[in-house]
Image 1 (spheres, rainbow, N blue to C red):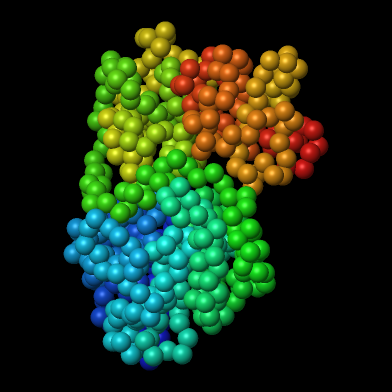
Image 2: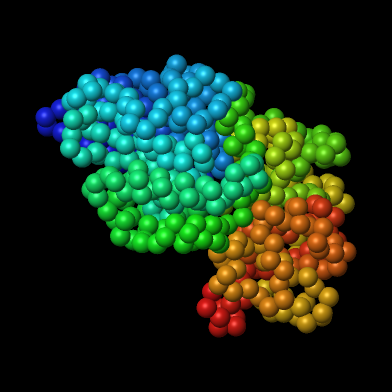
Length: 474
């Protein structure tokens, strides 16, 4: 969290970074200390943190600014506008189904006095998406150098935004990459080297391939160290930023559409308790049973047909990879995890949660015919299975990971594509799924079982354990 920056001559800026680890998402509250007028940039859907800060600090949130239509989370612009009356601001190229203010390069919004107070300057920076903007923050409108720049998904710490997410909707990755190059060099790299860089995402996000764990940098540091900003031709840049991107989770297009829509607001109520018969009836009608316990607990016993995505990992992202958007969902959780499991689904627009199994997995004690165990193999057991000659080995890691090595004979199907490409596997033959360490493989194996695979295991410790056993650099 970045504190307010004092200025003895006035023009103080209050600046807070709100970082959500589970989505690697950074949002920002910027305010003028004199007028107490504030803007929130790229908010998450559950907006209470911003409201609490505004109340505690006596701030008036008048603007909610989106750097683009996000694909990896459902943004909170509608919730904030409803709660505060704030004006919603997007770039000039944005088209939304709700009232917005469009801004263009050079346009400014003064949170305080236009000369001595905090001012936000907009720069159109298309490339990740056509409507992308960056927001330059001036502590004083007449300062010679800005305080920082909110770069959205255009410039990350150690990376730049991926230009390939809209390749299926009429614009090519190459076309966007050319625009991205221009935005970086003509809009962002023209800022002074001392300008702080505040991106919308950090390490772990699927919005790039090489994001740093750091959440703030400077233009100068990025100019010197970011691989995508090194001297190269435009063609070289296009090849560099389009190669090796992680597979986009299936919910990305769904979220991008919802972020343009006049959708329903967040329902943050607790999920309804459902008895086992209700859960079974919902499952028979097509609902997904989503078990949010960790992989080890899931393996010891679960409701047949359940999909396992542990809440302690990148839960929402991987649910969005293995569960079809718009699905009706019934939760099975550890005690006390019910509301968190539902909220984190709401952050990616998976709102159709019917409820949660009342009493959790213990409800299967009297119905053992409904319970299943999941097979998890250590490296020795895995290699015995492979020597049998009838095992399909599936690597669900992303291209940047598999480029460093795979288990010989493995079929590479990134987790985000596994549901669509499951038909390339023989679901009646044994399958072993592996990832880097075991989290995604449990999700992938459970998905295949839910699709009808009859003999599926996953590899404990994943590729890392196999590589260590074979003295291979992982």
